[in-house]
Image 1 (cartoon, rainbow, N blue to C red):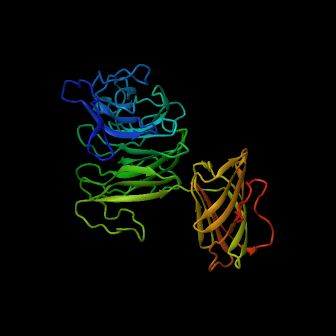
Image 2: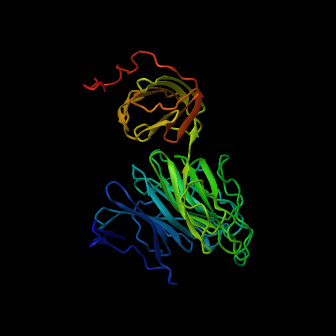
Image 3: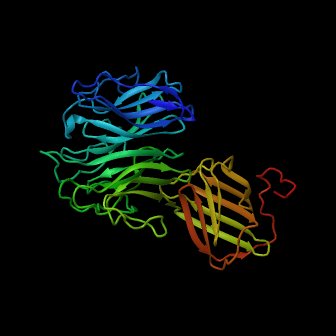
Length: 453
């Protein structure tokens, strides 16, 4: 592990992280790295060394009876000491799988509490999982692989959750009684603790959700080896259920290549951005994107953005407009959909009334009892917004007033959209003329300034 200074002119620190290997020329590879707010570095990969440096009290400090294990190591900000270091993998041989139970980790992400989220590939039916996790059993009886997602606590001493993520693999062998399956390549985590994973799969029964962009395996049979397809999956904060999961790819080249997801990041609104490689001329693209046509005989990179919108189970709204003053009042009530959650300290809020869209950045609201409030200017518009909740029923109530907004061209019925993080609702309603009344929620807001805001 190495840290370069900001100018790239000198090493701040640089260190080996290794054991003695397995005696057959196999040692360690570091394949993923992340930082926390204190600049501690978290590294993951795999090791074939039974004497890889691990720390007392870590989750797994004994090398298993396997070929190679994943590892997770936390180095302090100076690069001088291990905070914790642990193996992650099967501790015994046997069961199904190949490569002698090998586990390899490729991606790691850290949340605000210092918990580590790790993904990769395991060839063992004895990989450690936790009760209540999404998939606690290895999904294939063949010698194949499954992806995994594991969350370690901040001390590195225990699994918060750990789950397989995969299907039965390919029926097409790559060697004597050897098959390929699923692989997790990269992972990200949002402010609510949901994990986002991408990788590749050749399983026709890889777990997807009903709202998946692509619910079935689209790759054509390949003549040499199974052609993979990328996947994108979102796991809930408890690690117990998929919020969203989809294949992502086309038909491949029909010989030996398909589509692979290699990197993923998530923004403050819960949108996921995925990159990887494709050799599919029918890989899904969108109108108006930078490059919608396949232009190579050798494969292309791809970039895809996913919006994981969770629709409100109930959304009602009343709108009053004053076109002379370019002002509006909005009263709405909504109920969160399954899997939805709200934390306005970390989520952005977007109001769309007709053709006018206003986004209040994450962190702009102030918590007050069971509600949140915001007052300020957004792109020239003056806004006051209050959101209150009935926590027991997940029912919420919004009141908003705005001035100097763009109401040009708005006619009835008016389309109204409210998005909070990845929770959203849209409806059409007949707007009424705005009445002359005070809709400024003086009981909740501080005193107004000299400009009336």
